[in-house]
Amino acid sequence: MARAGHRIARVVTEMNSLTLMKQAAGAGIGATILSWPSVEADVAQGKVAAIEIARPAITRVAAMCMLAHARVSRATECVLSEATRAVRETVRRAPWRGVRFIGPE
Image 1 (cartoon, rainbow, N blue to C red):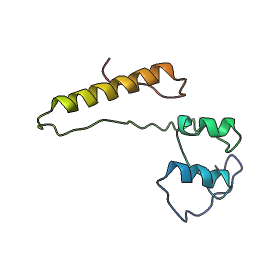
Image 2 (image 1 turned 90 degrees about the vertical axis):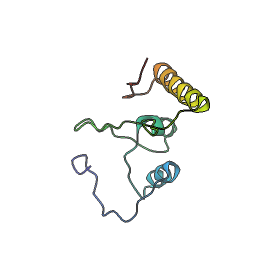
Image 3 (image 1 turned 30 degrees about the vertical axis):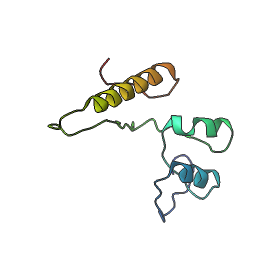
């Protein structure tokens, strides 16, 4: 941020709410690092400004997990299958910058 001409302030609070983080940034009282899909509409509406972090690349993986030795019920199988299908189809359809599906086809 300093190289982009922004003053780096001391961290005085941490938030775990997407809504609050975007509101703080939009009010000019904070800065945050968020995924493009989570701010795209706000940027388009002029509520916040976004600067892409290109180097170093920032990645994260979202995973569905369960106990390795747990007996899987039919309901659990259905939820996992539908959630996987929904995420795969959304990633294929949506123009999400930097998002890719790495699960089973």
